[in-house]
Image (cartoon, rainbow, N blue to C red; front, side):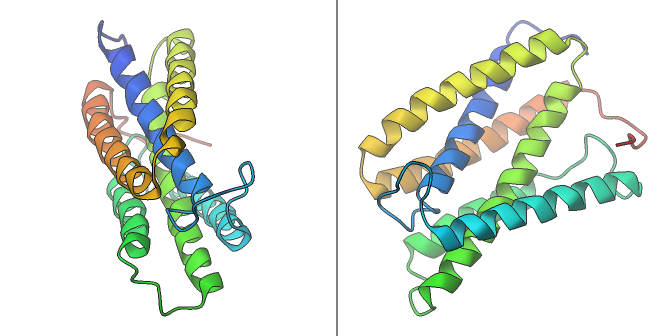
Length: 192
């Protein structure tokens, strides 16, 4: 796929916003903790997130290998619903009556599921490009955006980080939808 002049910027910014939102979700355990030690926010959250990410990743591979999912057609809607839903469950205190370990595991599972899907959707955009070097530059640009924003956003209150995470994820989802209209959609499954 040849890319037009503004598309690399769209792809970098969109993926950068995704990476920022998912990093903030991980660092804050979807807004459920106010401080972390490095990248360790809450152990139950982290274990559930990583398990959910692995299961989701294997599920995507299985769906593609069995022909049930056509390359370029991984839906982002489940990721958007799970991500926003996880933050809202916590922000609206809808998990308050549950044991803290269960709440952390539920939020972790929602985070791992949504992060894996949305990142796989963006990687489809980069993989569809005819020039690998251009895709690499766009991914590096996204990681630079993530590095700057993740460094700045934790300086504000927890509520602002929660709202910013949700908005960044939704904006990046809209940008992903636009980006996907610009790439070719494959008609047959790819082999993994």
